[in-house]
Figure (cartoon, rainbow, N blue to C red):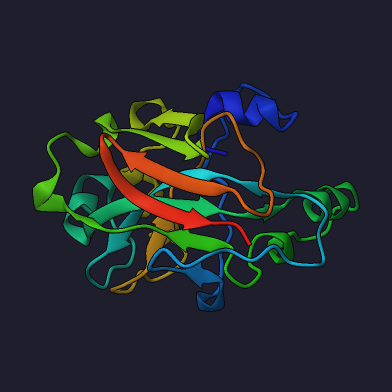
Length: 199
């Protein structure tokens, strides 16, 4: 919930949260190397959420935002797949909703761009998701409610960050369902870093 218009899209408020909204995905949720995503049989509505992802490069705890840049070394795009029907059920009952976010292969991770190869600042990046050649979601990291540095600061105040940890930083407006046979391609600026099919 790091982009105002997406919050509104989910029926929430445009007002800023006091702190980032955080949840975790297990390592079994990772889907890499442009492998296909297979729709699970426990949900009738799996939705894509395209996000900037940063890769943690060193051990850190209680990291101040002004030092956060020292703790990541690469970025890419990722898809946070969400079983939206299950999430709505869990939220309506006040239950935790990790199961609708942390199922197998629900965290798609694209090809990494090393920090040194970025031509723009981290909070000045454009990204988009195309499905079958049509742009369905666009984002700009400058629109984040909480910067990457603030997210690193907040998360590391609770959990020690370890080398190789990945932080998905929230999705902009435009989330929607995926269907068998679709071709998803994600672009960070003009670089195709995410490319896979739905099976």
